Length: 217
Image 1 (cartoon, rainbow, N blue to C red):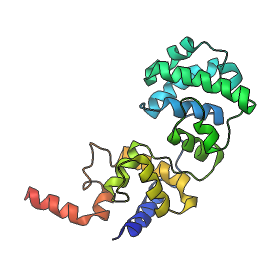
Image 2 (image 1 turned 180 degrees about the vertical axis):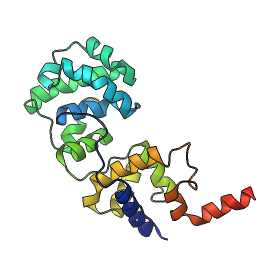
Image 3 (image 1 turned 180 degrees about the horizontal axis):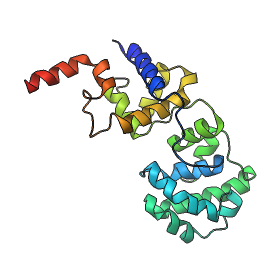
């Protein structure tokens, strides 16, 4: 099975498992999604979803958020890690949204990446999940599985992103990146699968499974 065939098989299997994958971060609109994605850096979605209700009760718009002292924002978001940096970014980007974008989250990758604390992956998540623009955000789960499934040789997430975009049809990108994340968490985690034990890995790489069985024997 070559790389393109594996990609097609993966897309098929994941679509069967997760036909309509939900967005894992709770949000109300593009602004609250942007804040939630920013907070999710080096933090679990579960933790972010526990923190954001208090934050959004305090301020759920850029206009309101820019008026909140950074120290108060930090006190709320501290459980997500990197509290000082994330609080400053939330305050700073809220002010920029008001002053430069009329209080709205911009709908271009370049403008999003120009906001404080918003990197390439965060911007792509917002483009995909808030605006429906075909994007393929690559997080640690996707980067790990793309390598495990021999879909990329890239050592960087940017190279992995480029390789995956070549392998999968553009109209699949937004759902597929969520499907890979859910699969990695549920079936093929870094600790729970060595690339040979989960059902999809066994199907894609039967030779690896035979090697494992031979070693046990």
